[in-house]
Amino acid sequence: MIGFLRRGAAIRPPSHPREERSDAALRSQPLARPRLSWSRVLIWFMRIMALLWIARGLSYWAVILGAGEPGPAFEDRPPGVQTTIVYFAVIDLIAAIGLWLMTSWGGVLWLLAVMSYLILAAFVPAAVALNLVMGLTYCALMVLYLGLSYLAGSEEQ
Image (cartoon, rainbow, N blue to C red; front, side, top):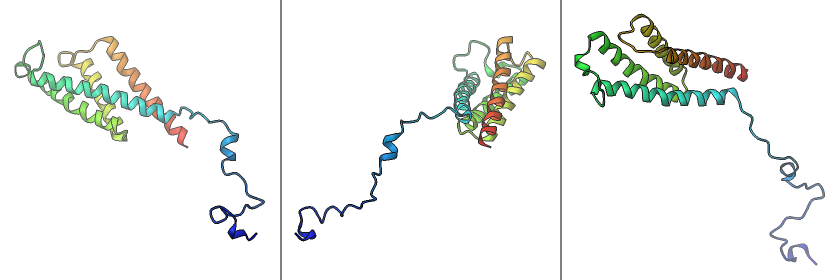
């Protein structure tokens, strides 16, 4: 019989002897799990720190606005303490945005915020309250961030 008159000949092209199945490579190998990379760990670390620093910045704004603060009103505090509160209310939120966006300036600003908090706690304890556990936690977070940044950067090369 003539090939074009056969049933289904117009729908399906004639088979070629060298034709291979296109899904053979997919069927032969099991699905590979994606491996954990240092850059992914750094992303998660920066996002978690961003959420914590947003909460921290908003807590300073709560002090400025007088929301739930049992201490003296913001206006009744010494000017040095007021300046410190406003500084951290601004820098913590900007650093948190930079961390969330995973920009290099976000990490630098976050390091600046943490270092300025530690330095003020060491030299002007009346302006910033800090206990030993929180100080060590901040130092550990900085070392962890720097280590993860180094490992993520060496992974890409």
